[in-house]
Length: 162
Image (tube, rainbow, N blue to C red; front, side, top):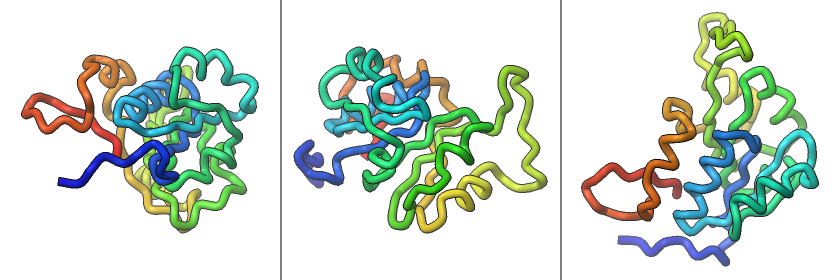
């Protein structure tokens, strides 16, 4: 069995683009797994001060470029904001965890995808990245159910981000 990644290891830092409920839930899960988190949003790092304070040790605010500079980046923004959130960033070699849902707000209607999957669209927007679709079928509150260590090997339900 491999050892957990040390927080001093730069690959242990996860960037999260999006600071809403889903982004914060992903950050909590990552911190419980021993990861450092850089959170970013479209309004800039200063706007994240209350979020970072609430999330506690292991979470810092940064620019979108700072978050995308991590080897693993979670994308947790509303579907309509995805193109602007990822535009102009260097995605080559990154693992992108796509936690988006192809829904339009506030109507909660399905976004027009023209016969493609949302993952195909996101993959085109993050060229050179390895895309993983995850976290989008679980509401943000499901990440809060248990304070159990997500690295546990217990047979009970465990969520992990590695």
